[in-house]
Image (cartoon, one colour):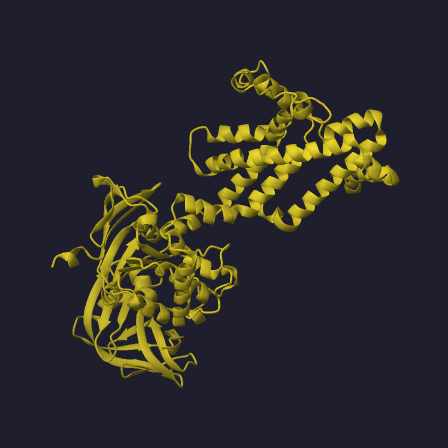
Amino acid sequence: MEGALGAGLDARFEVRRGEFRLALGLSIPLGRTVALLGPNGAGKTTALATIAGLHAVQQGRISLGGVTLDDPAAGVFVPPEQRRVGVVFQDYLLFPHLTVIENVAFGLRSRGVARLPAQERAADWLGRMGLAGLEGRRPDDLSGGQAQRVALARALVSDPELLLLDEPLSALDVTTRGRLRRSLAEHLAAFPGPRLLITHDPAEAFLLASEIHVVEGGAVTQSGTAEDIRLRPRTAYAADLAGSNLLEGIAGEGRVMVAGHELHIADDVEGPVLATIRPNAVSVHRQLPEGSPRNTWATTIDLIEHLGERVRIRTGPPLILAIEITAEATEALGLAVGDEIWVSIKATEIGVQADPA
Amino acid sequence: MGCIGLAWFVVPLVALVARTPWSALPRILGSEIVSDALSLSLVTSVAATAVAAVLGIPLAWLMARVEFPGRALVRGLVTLPLVLPPVVGGAALLFALGRRGLVGEAISQATGLVLPFSTWGVIVANVFVAMPFLVITVEGALRNLDSRYEGAAATLGAGRWTVLRRVTVPMIGPSVVAGLVLCWARALGEFGATITFAGNLPGRTQTLPLAVFVALESDRDAAVALSLVMVAVSLVVLIVLRERWWKAL
């Protein structure tokens, strides 16, 4: 059947806001999460607002489930209130003058559902989000994590065809972020339509999305899987921010076990963790270095890529890592693909955060 | 110097209270001329506030939300009555709405309604002088409102009217109330434009401030009593605004 072809989100457009211009092309099939990853001011929020219908495109076309939402050439523009798009806004934007249940029921009420059934469905969603009992609270009296889940419930309660999330975790403190990322991943998985995540945090994009578009200065500079972006960043931004090595492991007694390999860490953490290693924190040697740090092992070079003055190296087993050194050092060491090398990293250079299941 | 500055405000009020004929107060406030002026003032100031709400809130919305050429000029025109001497405003109203006025002639021919020197005229003068307080307060609130909330409501299926009713108005509600109270208080105290445009006819156009002015010539005790009533009203307005809405301005 051809039906599946039109399913999902298809957006290829150019939108101008004053001096700013954003050009974007993305397709998200049903049940898939795509992330727009980029620095502040790159145009990510403009992209979200445009897909939601809050801005009209100047050129191009946006369609959802085979239905055109915006196409200036064809004279089509579906206003936001008629698009079935659920949005979790940056800062959540819960209506401060309404209670939690009124916030969640808002979408149903505006679409003509009577008060009682709307409140019942809203209460049902609050229960699903683990927020039962908070119905009568005002948004000001919620914790960041509670507000995030209310915003998610508000976006999902009227069964949208598309879910857009703008920095859903950035307003949270570090201790709740890991837990809420897990719960967000579960809710995303339960949503059958396409999902678009907007974030400036590479870890969020890597963990929640199957495909990532790096957005810089109003344009997509790289698209690919988390693996592609992490191991082969094409721009300096991607290399700096997205290029960190992210390793899932189990911590205990000053060590983390990652895929059978033991890393010494400086933090005192127990249980499941997420370890981050910046590529430029790893040093490369031809021989076993003297007075070496405790984290030193032998490996091979799988890949070498030049990024201007920098060179990125991907190592093979026992631990696949992206490493960044200068072009000068690469030359001095005479590194080539397939070479055996020693790598080392100080325990203090390994960032560790608890990642409870 | 600061103390002299403070005394400048306080001494006249103390003098007013000291001069108050407390024992005769109930009799004076119960007299026909006072109760007429009081009820006329209440009716006209409330009516003027209602008219200002119906016309002024949409005007504030236009000024805050719609880009149109000459918007700065419109803002200037709206604030003009704040600085214009009210007598001049009253005179201008006479030329516009008087029996032979620019618009007044057409109005009286079409409807038979003659605005000057009538209770309607009092309301017209009050609206002219007091509406800017409401417009400016509401416009400021609309500008400060984070319009992303209205966008959020739109993505939740709310059309323009629903957004206005369920998001915009409730979120600027405190400022609207503050603007209405300020507008009402200004209308209640209006003197110059009223006496110029509507005259000073007891029972028809003689509001509280006008009655105070007349009573100063004939019956000092009544003037003091009426003044006291207005001071009390002003204080209540200030307290209400300070306690609940001042911060929203």
